[in-house]
Image 1 (cartoon, helix red, strand yellow):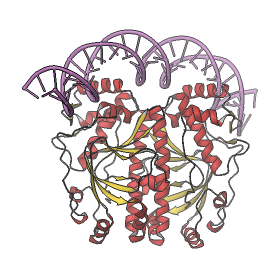
Image 2 (image 1 turned 90 degrees about the horizontal axis):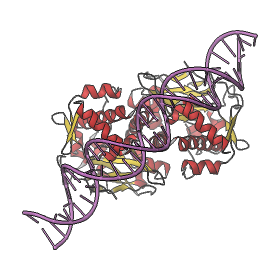
Image 3 (image 1 turned 30 degrees about the vertical axis):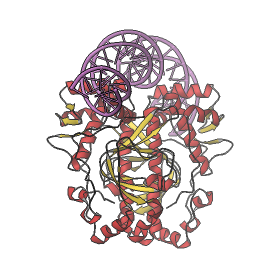
Image 4 (image 1 turned 135 degrees about the horizontal axis):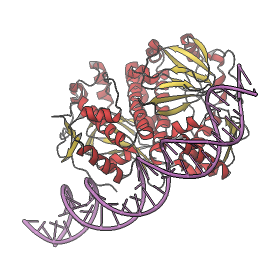
Length: 257
Length: 257
DNA sequence: CGGACATTTGACAAGCTTCAAGAGAAGTGG
DNA sequence: CCACTTCTCTTGAAGCTTGTCAAATGTCCG
């Protein structure tokens, strides 16, 4: 059992999200524009919204749910575990990320999805996924896009786990999380909400908790970052990028479903 | 520069693959059936076929090609490298795997694809990918499916790299490669062609070459497998599965494009 | 204030990497 | 056809990174 993580500085989920035509996420500028018609279709398709508390399983491992989700607000993670409990976090999910696509397509829940903060989800019926493709090929294209861009992140995480040392791994993760959150307008004064325990970081990086802690401390003492009261402050983002051998071209607009 | 690897026991690529309507891969039973109409569309879409020699770059890292491919025959790999040359193999590609989807969608070649054996590719024009979705939503759905099932493999590799020890990693890789090849009818007498150097295995597993070698030797001495003259013989598949904490439900039919 | 976590540190052990060097295999050219 | 070159595989030894164990401190919350 993992504890519930509260989210002190994180913008509280809007109690009730707006309709798709007035979706709060689309104003961030991070997503490709959609036609009014597409928005109306999405809205008709959407079962509703659902809040979930931090620590809850959005999709339990090895079980096949009946719903698909778009993460509207908050943080979540995809993970896999071995039979003896060792856990690997595959990637972290931010607002706009689509949840459940892999399970639907491979007909097999091979990983779990857990809310890291209190979360707000847009809910879609799983068995009607196919209608996206029929309704408007552009929506199908968008789904492939979303799937591919998640894979891009997992690819990078695999490189990190396989070939970066502990220092590089931690630096990489901090840079990535900051960049992704910043893109969504979640950064303020060079800092973002940081609702992760060091165990989360360790499980994402393939390191032990203790070693993750020591590495984090070293980077902090070098003046590269500060983590305090649930926020990550990027003191020297360039330094972290160099340390991580970080290289990424800026991401274009992402579709949102 | 990596050497050219010959493929002694591997079925030689058909000099010229048949038309899509008589595609040799569809007889394996591993792929979902397609309608005659879809096959004709694919055929009209296909630019042609291209053989490539082992060691050649199908898609160079950090470059954006103008073509998409289906691997028709042979083995390939997707990989990423750090600036100092450390390489991580993301996954191995077998016949039926689609190549280049991520680049197209994220408009950014973030990984390279290299032929491990002599290879035969079906070539499609990159800039017409969109037509798949317009022509027949089922084709778009199939593309998402292919993307998601590659991600499933990368997810598993990330778990392996992050949370399995050296012995488990090697066992896992052997089991996976065997299962995937077997599924395509490439296994004979409990063995498959194995065109990998130990450096490939090391780069896929996030291990050093030396440690990979020692681990392989240990598993071989335990009577779990034999690698000889370019073939992997699974002497004790169950033993390897147990050692790897391998768990996977049988895969249903995969779409083929 | 007490309990449950999360973070931090030190000491020690172990797994994995690096270095080095020889043996085997495979392609190349005279 | 054999010598030469270049990979690949194999093994031993030493060192370093990372993991494990243990315990103290800090923090949040009822």
